[in-house]
Image 1 (cartoon, rainbow, N blue to C red):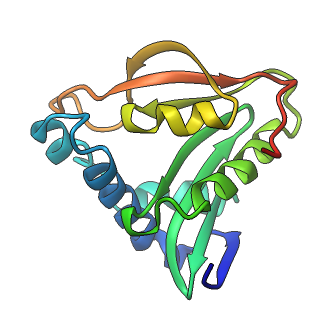
Image 2: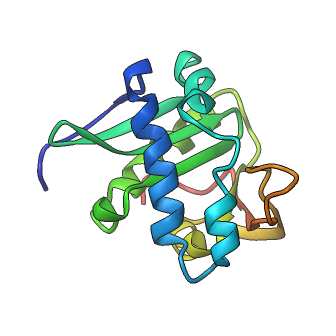
Length: 163
């Protein structure tokens, strides 16, 4: 693999983090969501959407040959976001970022680690030990945005994060 660096997100990464989210949803979720959902999902979002997570130290990024290609956002008991550019998918970057998110989410938390998975990512999370617990809709977007179906998934507290 080319030179991969996993590091805390910085303010200078905000435009890249936004673009990774946009491109990942548009590219990797295509075929699972309608064109209207794909077009509207990032409504109301921009680079500033991610500032709080960066400033709080909740976002870790993956840098490949000097370019940010993925990130994970986490909180106690939760992996909030995990996105990788379509051009970087399939290289193990998402798995490495997920492990970081799981470890961070478990700090001071004894229960399962939960997340909302986009439909296209359910298989990825299942391979990492997560199990589907419910279906729902993403909080991403606005009231006018067509609802984005998600699968609520959980990693039991006894599951290993070293797969």
